[in-house]
Image 1 (cartoon, helix red, strand yellow):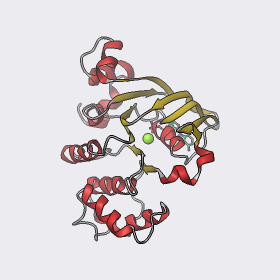
Image 2 (cartoon, rainbow, N blue to C red; image 1 turned 135 degrees about the vertical axis):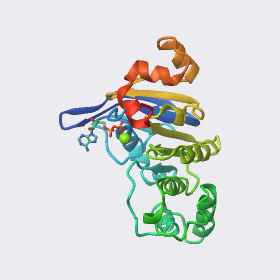
Image 3 (tube, rainbow, N blue to C red; image 1 turned 90 degrees about the horizontal axis):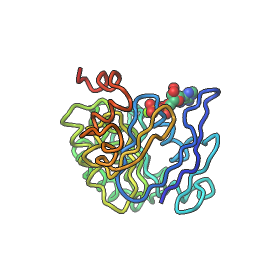
Image 4 (cartoon, rainbow, N blue to C red; image 1 turned 30 degrees about the vertical axis):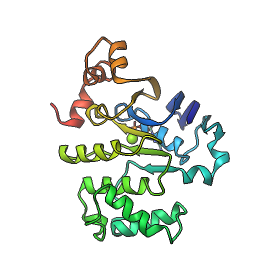
Length: 247
Ligand code: ADP
Ligand code: MG
């Protein structure tokens, strides 16, 4: 179980997160909000990459800072930025990440084959990451996030910049991750997360607006019948339409 207590993050005088409290148990959660809402900041705090200005993150009742390496070993994270490690092959990158995660040299070969096969990247594994398509880069990022079978998986906009076919593939791979984990997936595109998320967490300008199932959210906000309309209702349409190319 992951618990956030009153998480606040300020970048100088910019308030990126304002007293966000949240408890998650196993399942897939969609973290939904427009650009600048605070999604990446929240994910970086959950993964321990940045410290909150205030508040606390707990894993099974223990502070994640106190847990340290133990927490990192049960955590998988795919950051939003791509373009790192372009000169590595996919396999070399996974081997590097496996070492960082403390997976022993003995266990690495089978674990790397497992995650490559999971994201359907076995055949491209010996090519340099720089030659991959956007979808392949996202899938290799997901592969490294699931190395060592982590109990908490955080994926920051894993479908950003992908074409419709690749989006579906990435979504299906996320969906197939087994049920005994917490999986948090951020997006500003409703259709990427709606079919697979147990609950949606709505975030706007650093505020957690609500978290609930899709039908309950639709009922609560403006009595709309789908999440796409709800998104428009809460966040407005312009940026969303621009980013998904539906205008
Ligand atoms: P999202 O991932 O939802 O697009 P971010 O968490 O990246 O949102 O950003 C939230 C807000 O914090 C934005 O206004 C952004 O400009 C600001 N921000 C993010 N990172 C920094 C930083 N390192 N320094 C200053 N401001 C930042
Ligand atoms: Mg972001």
